[in-house]
Image 1 (tube, helix red, strand yellow):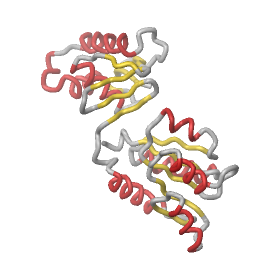
Image 2 (cartoon, one colour):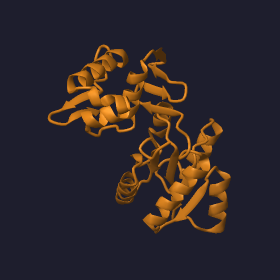
Image 3 (cartoon, helix red, strand yellow):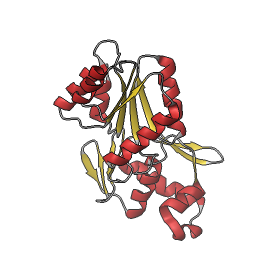
Length: 228
């Protein structure tokens, strides 16, 4: 799994710290979703498939390690790094007992946090796998070449699958037609003109979003397409 696929959740009630971590993780190429409390996190986890969570212990409402313990009880095994000012030995023990995989005390060094994130992702296998891509209503099983939309399996040609996979790996980034040709058509893309790319994208759109309810594809004038 490349870093563009890896999604990380941060739960941190201090907005400046949340933004700082988001900035550094995004710069490293991860997809990041931040929360200021545990509210709405469980609902998010039902819809998305993050590879790692960074959780502050001192949160409003439910304390961070209690929330992680609750997630473990209901079956979530997402790796967790606790980030907190609670650095007494008893606090550390409690954090690990409640499902933490790593621990950083505040104030922290952002470079060290990035290294710990990478190490934990490597240990959990997230950097090595390329099994599943999820975005909104779409789930791609990469090795099996299966696409599921709204719990229904949709049949795609090999080209359409590669095309969608390319878009799913570059959410919300303008992609040129040359880039799409290179990734989806490969060496055969040399003879493919811009109109053929547009036709292939329209076919794909009609399969995954026939009513245009999700509005995934956005033409970018003079560039190509944006998928979001």
